Image (cartoon, rainbow, N blue to C red; front, top):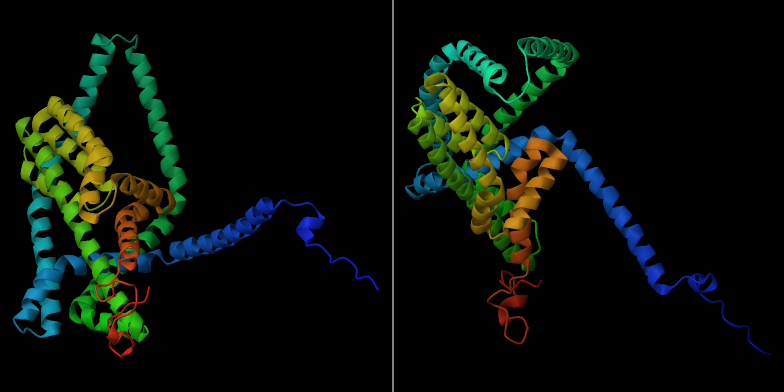
Amino acid sequence: MPQPDPVPPARERVGIHPVVARLGAYSWWLIGIGIVGLAVLWVVAQLWVLLLAAAIATFLARALDPPARFLRAHRWPRALVAAAVLLGFLVVLAGIFAVLVPSIASEFDDLGPTIEDAIDDVEDWVVEDSPFDVSRQDIEEFREQADERVGDVLQSQSGTLVSGTVLVFEVFAGVLLAMVTTFFILKDGDRFGQWFVGRFPEHRRDLSVRLGARAWRTLGGYLKGSATLGIIEGFIIGTTVWLVGGKLAIPVAVVTFFAAFVPFVGAIVAGVLAILVTLVTAGLDGAIVVALVALAVQQLDNDFLAPWVFGKNLELHPLVVLVAITAGGTLFGIFGAFLAVPVSAVIINILAEVRVVPEELAVDGSPPPDAERPGGKFVQD
C-alpha cells in the first residue's frame, strides 16, 4: 500500500522563504526584548529617587575609599573610619560653601542695577549705532510683549507649585538616603562584596571578584576624568575672569571645578555664574569676553575634552562617550546624562573582563588540576 507524502512545513506550504521566516522569528524576539526594555525604563523612572541615592552613594564611597583604606590600615574601627571620612568630607564641603557663597552673594547686591544699565546700553546701541532700523517705540513694544509672555508663563506654571515642592522633597530625601548609604558602604563595603560573591557557585566566584574590581576601577577612572575636566575648565574660566578685571576669579574657578561632575548642566550653570559675576565686577565688555570664552570651553568640553579624557581614563572610545551622554540625556534628562558615562563604562569594562582568560587556564584549554577542587580559581566562562 503506497504511503502518503509527508506534509510539508507550514512555511513551505505558503511559500515563505527561509530567510524571511528567520527574520520574522528574530523580529518577534526583538519585540519581546523591546517590551522588557520599556518595562525596565518605566521601573527606573518610578524609582529614580532610589537610583539617585544609590548613584550618589556609590560615587561618594568611591571618592572617599582611599582615605578610608588608609585609616583601616592603621587599625581604626570600621564605624569610626566611615564616620570620620564622611564627616570630614561634609565639613570640607560646608567650609567651601561658607567661603564662596557669602563672597559671591555680596557682589550680587548690585546685579539688578548693573543688568538694567547693560540693557540700556544695548538698547542705545541698537537704536543709534546698529545697522538695523529699530526705533525706541519698537523696543518699548517688544518689552511690553515680553512682560506679557513672562506673566503668562508664570500663571501657567502656578499649578505646578505642588509638584515642584514634591520634587524638592524627593531630592532632599534622596540625598539624605545617599549619605546613610555612603556610611554603610564605607563601613561594610567589603563585607557586602563577600556576601554577594558567596551567592555565586564556587567556580564562578573568582570571575565575580574580577568583575567587581574592574567596575570599581572604572568608577575611579570616571571620577578622575571629571576632576581633570574640572581643573581645566576652572583654570580657563577663572583666569579669563581675572584677566578682564573681574573679582571672585578663585570662587568662580572652584564652582566650575565642582560643576564639571554634572555633565552639560554643570557647565551651563558655572558659565552663567561667571558671566554674572564679571558683569557686576568688570562691566558689560568683560562679561561678553567671559561669555565667549565660556561658550568656547563648553563646546571644547562636549566635542573634544570630555570624550578624550573619559575615553582615556575609562578605556572607552570618544565616540562611545559622546553617544552615551546623548542617549542618556535623551532618555532620562539630567539624571541620565549624569549616569550615562559611568554606567556605559562599567558595562563595557565588565564585558571585557568576562572575556579575559584566567592565568590558571592551561595552554591547551583544559582546566588546571585544582579546577575541580572547592576553592579552585579556575573560571569556566
